[in-house]
Length: 168
Image (cartoon, rainbow, N blue to C red):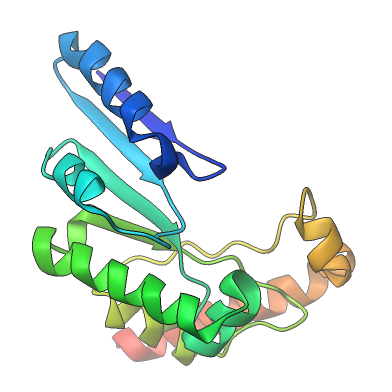
């Protein structure tokens, strides 16, 4: 059994390498391949690769359009394209082909209901909450994330309570 996750830069820029790894893993009985992508582009080659039932996509979804734009794309047009690509994958392959997870800025977290609604719009039934990890590019873009432990746990508790109310 094997599970391989392709992370970036942007791994969909080298589908030839992903396909080579998939072929090399053919000897395993159970296999799963997860491509972590920003879903900025969705082309015919990627769609053909997704025909393989062992290949899944993982992406980031930080909330409704305005928050996702602020934290990820910086452009409403890019966010619109991202959402259109996510919806196209779901329409063609089903919601199980795509998983998403948010990165929460504890200094400016999304409203819990807005985050839940963003996930429901993409037929996602799971949300794994995580705060910004103060490493890499986040050190430059989210300097305030360095000292937010208390606000993170406050948000987390508020989110879980809201999730319970919505599911009750």
